[in-house]
Image 1: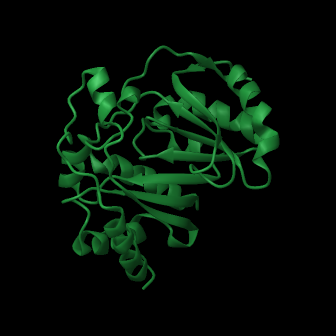
Image 2: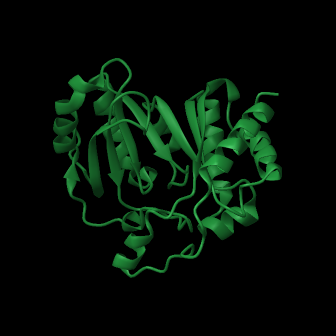
Length: 242
């Protein structure tokens, strides 16, 4: 076992929303994007590397009895793809234990996606936006990097959950969700998509920005109305399935 280290913020022992079944969710520090609606600004930067692979495997194995047939481990963040070498080795070790692995990502890493994805069972993909201009404005990054990731995942026939945060005045209109359906069909193998979720933008992370003394770009942005978000989702599904 390679005993390299990674910078991990928190570990959720028995998560129930980040992938199927009961899961251990590992939140890695570090992200190259600066999404204006991010609710985890404490994970922006890679900090001291505080977990070695062997200790993490031991911790995960303690929870394995709770996984049942559907559960497993979810690699989240931040952006776990920034820890590529650690991820490659960790996933190999988890597969030897026959543990299901989900990767929660924006597809914005530093390469070697094929090696990382070899042992990934499910990609939980976070759509930020679908146009180069709005993606840049919303995240500070280039959408082309996510296209590289999705192209590789598509060729490898990886299973997907797709998530879209619905931000008021950006995504809460029929024109956007119509274009979103076309975007997903273009970049992801539709036959491999198991679930699509709309997540209403919320302000639960606002206090974190204040505590960290980080400017909150959406300080004055209202939360997304959950009922409208559900209505848009129902409309989207009809368009997506056509």
